[in-house]
Length: 87
Image 1: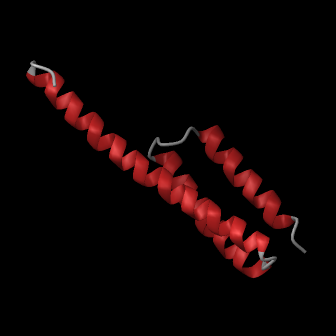
Image 2: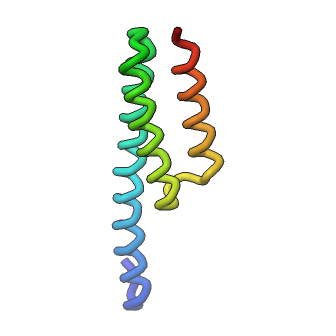
């Protein structure tokens, strides 16, 4: 670990922020998996609900700076197009 007080603090802050970002990314992955599982089971209603939840989680991750806005938009777009293919 660093010797300078400010460097020690930066190490601790970076570690804390990395843990938060990891938790947020994990939540996004879980939400995406739920949408994909609903699509696989061909359940339109469940897929729509899961998509709404996943969109919310992805947007929150974007607003917190975990994802770039284009990345978040791409994820939402791909999920929405996959759900819309269900009839």
